[in-house]
Image 1 (cartoon, protein in one colour):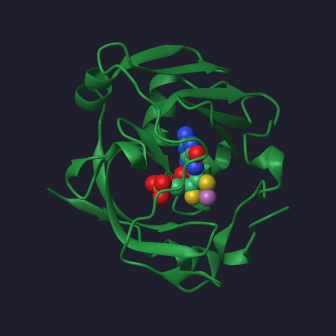
Image 2 (tube, helix red, strand yellow; image 1 turned 90 degrees about the vertical axis):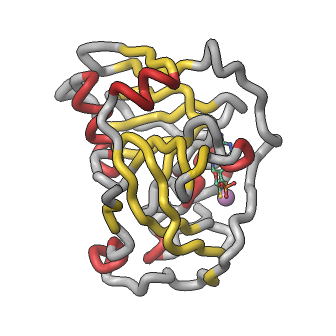
Length: 199
Ligand SMILES: Nc1nc2c(c(=O)[nH]1)N[C@H]1C(S)=C(S)[C@@H](COP(=O)(O)O)O[C@H]1N2
Ligand SMILES: [Mo]
């Protein structure tokens, strides 16, 4: 299996591999606003809607087997100060998903929706990067439930709160909107190399 290594991403941000104010950890702490939500694997779907040509609803099986996927080695930066290096995530890249649904020219922003009611937002151009993935596996195994299984978003170029665990909706917007933490004092932009932690 080929692994795409994107751990050199920090160079684009003129920063060190471990961003300022972060400490490297080998653990993988869990941060969730309200615990791990239940879901039914039979009825779970990833829905894509808004400013797109083809609104789609993917079953897990469809998403994992019928859409082009890949494995990447990435770093993970939590706004609370820990960074976990060399995480291997397997999933579909955001540009691949965008391609499937046909994003409208007037789409500028994206809202991710999750099973626990969590939401998080990013400008479309921050999503249209190969390293933004909707991932179902971590280090070769099914993504642990507490880390967002069956499906989560990873955003190694941004603090990890920009990556919705238990993601079940991707909404393309023609105006920016704010998600759960972005409305509650976390930085809207979340660049780890500029320490954009809290607003
Ligand atoms: N659905 C959902 N996604 C979420 C969260 C959450 O509470 N619910 N917490 C976010 C925050 S604040 C962080 S730091 C990361 C933590 O991911 P981890 O628990 O796998 O370390 O998930 C993000 N995604
Ligand atoms: Mo967080």
